Amino acid sequence: MCLAKAYLRSPGSEGEDQLVLENVARVFLDDDRVRLTTILGQTEEFGARLKSADLVEGRLIMEAAKPEGRQMPSRMQTGSHE
Image 1 (cartoon, helix red, strand yellow):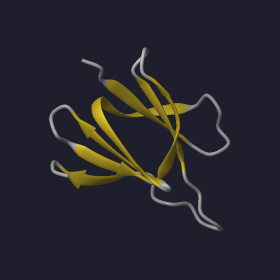
Image 2: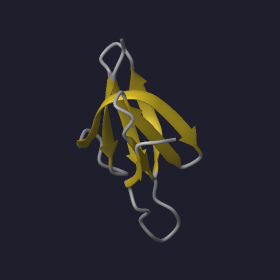
Image 3: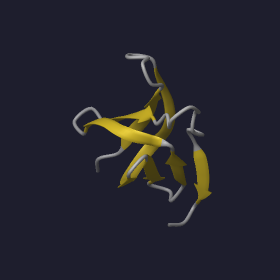
Image 4: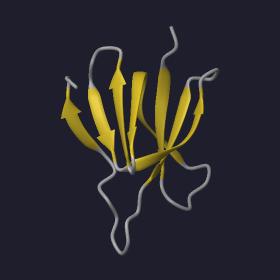
C-alpha cells in the first residue's frame, strides 16, 4: 500500500515545508485546488497547486496559491466524504 504525507510550501519559500496531512490515499486536482483524502476517509482541500509527488518516499509537496493582490486561504476541511 502506498500512502503519502502532504506538505504545504508558501510561495517563494523553497525548502520550508509544513506537514499538513498524513496517510494520504487519494489526490484530486482542480486548477488551484488540491483535495486530499486519507485512508480513513478524512478529506481536506487546499488552495494550492501540486508541486511534486515522490511516490517512492511517500511525499507530496503543494505550493500555496496566491491570487492577484491577496492570499488565498490555504486549507479548508471538507469532511469525511467525497
